[in-house]
Amino acid sequence: MTALKYSRQRESIKHYLMTTDKHPTADQVYMHVKQEFPNISLGTVYRNLNLLTDIGEAVKISTPDGGDRFDGRLEPHNHFLCTKCGRLLDLELDMKSIEEVNRLAAENFDGRITSSSTLFYGECSDCIKKS
Image 1 (cartoon, rainbow, N blue to C red):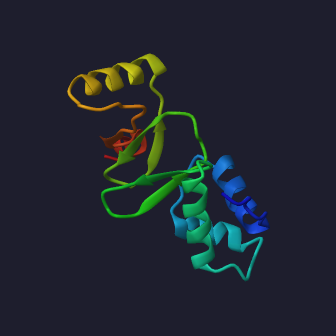
Image 2: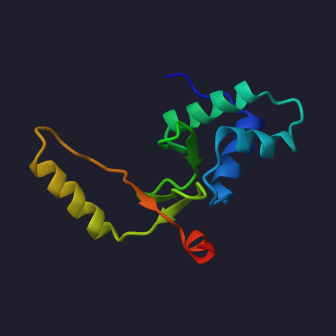
């Protein structure tokens, strides 16, 4: 594989993902990075987000509404999607719990499970307080 050419735009996208806990969509990343690079195109943002996920420097989280969200936090963790407001939050589970889920899944699978990602659904505390 050839070395990846350095890109200030890609670096800005990666930095934004690493410094936010908002799990932005590609459009949200575009609006943020556009402040620094006014001439950047949405297509460039999409290509760089896909490249970052392909090389393991970002995580793509597919949601049921079809909108992908992106995360710069690379260590294994799960997510919670609020079905009322659409917020996507990190869900902290200890690694022992995640390893147990992987072990249980592996017992019923003819193959090798090396990792997992679970998306939990419900209402966030802010939405519950508003009800």
